[in-house]
Structures are given as structure tokens and as C-alpha cells.
Image: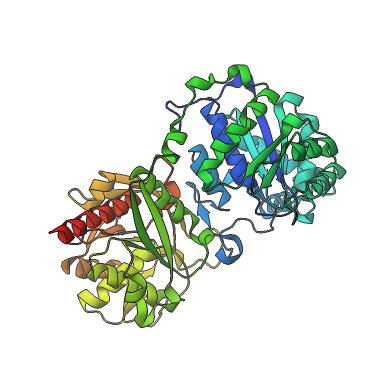
Length: 547
């Protein structure tokens, strides 16, 4: 969150920070990397990031949220790992699909070149052809930026990661020593007697060194800060200076991690090792808005019911984060209550009665659909602030068509091909598409907002948001829906993008996914509007009780 745009300094060249993980996955190396980037950005450097995912999928678009969390969508329509969302939120930048490198993407490109004869009869091999393509992708993503942080997904020792680690090993020899840093994030568990154990870190570093890589920085993930004796032991047995061993203890919130590693001095050490210290903005003058935002005292507490079918936060991570951002701006703690849409049935009123607001997020598949429709009807009839995202927008149309317009069997043709009233239908350009990956309506589109509407209060006269869908409001039913009182306040040509109910305190649906562009300090307008409506409703309720 800089106060003024930074620009690339050609005299610096590109500086690279590679981040690997050891012992186990899910340690938080992505948050560690993103936090480091946030601090370097505060110090005045233009920072970007690359996330390497060693799976064979070309992208994350066809992956089940149970296995891999949400599919995050970039501005160019790239369907990527949720870690890219953390990089965008922490660095406050917009990335492209070029910033996500997968095994599938690399091998596909190399094989296509081989089929085209581009290798001139050479035997195509992992080294040099695959490793060269990996390095090319990293360098192209880094072009025009002072610092590029490259996170290698998975764990050192995984067979899937080997070509990428080999590419890094070659990088070391191709870069000037002060242009390259290798940070290794590893687990430091406690024994039953309360001792911080360093053996997992030692073995992880040994595995790294066996493939020709020596870490420059070690970050110990532990529930608490590393003891001095723990740091000394890690430094001794892993052959790094003690000042290169840092703690990354558990945090109450991921947005506190930059503050913690700043206290550890990790950012200053990184700048020193990369020869950036003298070019950095002096500490007292650095951007400090991040700290101001994430450490604000809360004055309110609200309960938001998230009605979906995946009982895991990662499946809706950007929604959770967007609610958090809106809460920060309103000085409100937002408690998200999970409501399983597959188990709503006749008990939906009981499940939703304590909610101050309701969200139905995006999704695919018919499971839990009727439960989501029940939740939407409850919000509409009881004046509970509601926000529908993508599928939540479409099902709001279905609910309105059934219960207000009188089209009792109305549905989306995605879920009921025999419905007599397909108020939601397949996009015309989707009819002849067979492949599942990368074929939806993806990426940013500009929506025109109708003046005098709630959407205009949120966005003004237009908005640019990211999309991921195959179905839309069927144009044949738009007039009927509008005549019955539903307002489509945002459009792209004849495509409906935003809906609202003018007589409702806050009933908004968006065909796009506004959560993907939400940032700390720059919260998404529909989420800000939702929390604002919840707080207004609470104030009104308190006044009525007082009277």
C-alpha cells in the first residue's frame, strides 16, 4: 500500500528471493514470502512474485476445492492457486497467469515445441530443456521489477519438485551473488518436555544440500519464537550465520505476520544481503499504512452466515478475506459462521436466525442448491442484508422467479435441464466447448452501472471485476423479472452483472467475484456495503429496543 507508485530501477537489475519449504506442506511459506515482499515494498522497492506449483495440472481450474482450496482468478483470467491471492493482497498488485508456473504448463510448452520441430532434432530432456523453460518463465515474470520472490510449492524431497529445484541450482551460478537469496522455511516442533526440536530442520537442510542448494536464510515455523539456544543450534548444524536464523511464530491473523518478521529484522537482513540497504527508504519515512490498518481497535462485532457446501475456509478464502477487509474499514470484527447448504431443509430459519448478514458464494454442482435458495428467500423475506456472488447471484434470480414472479419450477439449466423456466442458462459461446480447463468466461470485464441505484452508490458509474462462470441470466426472462421488481443495476451489453432489490435494506448479487480484488485498506465495495448495512440494521434494532 504505497503512498505513491513505485517504478522499476534499471540500475538495480533483478533481485531474486527463492522460498522453499521443508518437513511438511502447509507451513506458511507463502505468507512468509508475501510478508517479506510487503516489507520490501514499504521500503520503496517494486516487488513481484512467482508461485511454482509442481502438480501436472496446467492450472488450478479443474481442481476440487476439497483438495486444493479455492480457485483464485487473476485479471487475465488465469485460474491459479490460492497463494497467488495472498501475494496480490499483501503486495497490493495485480498479477497474471505468467506468475504461476506449473509442471503441466512447462511440459505442455516443451512438448508443443518438440512436436513443432523447434529443437532441430535434439533429444529433449529434463535438463536442459525443462529447466531452461522454468528459468525463462521466472525471468520473464521478474522483468521490470526490482525484486522477484519465487515460492516453490510442496516440500523439498518431493519428486515433483526436483526439476524446479534443479532450475534454482542453475540460477545460483547464473546470478551475481548479491542478486540471489534462498530462504528455507521449516518446522520446529516441540517435544513433550517443551524442548524446541531442530532435527527436522537439520534433515530438511541436508536434503536441500544433497541437490546442490545451500540456504542463505532459515525461517523456523513454531508456535512461539525460537529460543536463543535453538537458533544457535540451527545455525551450527545447518551452516548459516546465527543472524540468518529467524522465527515465524503462530499469529492471531496472517496480516500480523509482516509486523512480526519486521520485529525479527528479516527484511533488513534481506536488503543487506541483496545490496539494497542504501537504496531503501529510511525506516522512519517508510509506508506504515499496513500496520495502521491491521492493528485498528474494533468497535463492533457482526455475525455473517456463509452458506455453501464446502466445510473448509480455504474453499472460500477470498470471501473470508474480503469480509475481514470490510470489517477493518468499519472497525468491526466479522465472525463468519459456516452454514452447510446441504443440510438446511426445514431447519434453515434456525440455522440463520443469529446471522446479521448472509452470503451465498460462488460454486459449481447441484449439491446444496436448494439449501442456498432457502437462505436467499430467508434473507429477502426477513430484510437480512444479503450478498450473492456468482452462483449466489444466479440463485437469487431463481428464487425471485419462483416466489415473486410465479414461475414455480424455475431453475438454472445447469442443475435442471428439464426446467420449463430456465431463468439461468448456458452462455451462448459455451455451447460448442468440450474441454473443461480454461474455457469459462474468465477474467476482468467492465460493467456499466445504472445511475441512482445502490450499485451506483457502491461503484459509481462503472466497475471492473473478475469473472468465472459458464451460465448467465437468460435474456428471455429479464423483462418479467424487472416488471416484478428485481433491478438489474449493472450490465455488460445484454449480460446481467449486478442485481438488487430497491425496497430491501441490502440485497445485492454480482455475477462477478468482487472478493478477488479486495485488499486490506482497499476493501471490495459490495462487501463494504454489506457490513455497512449490517451495522445500520444493528443500530436501528438497538434504537427500537431502547424505545
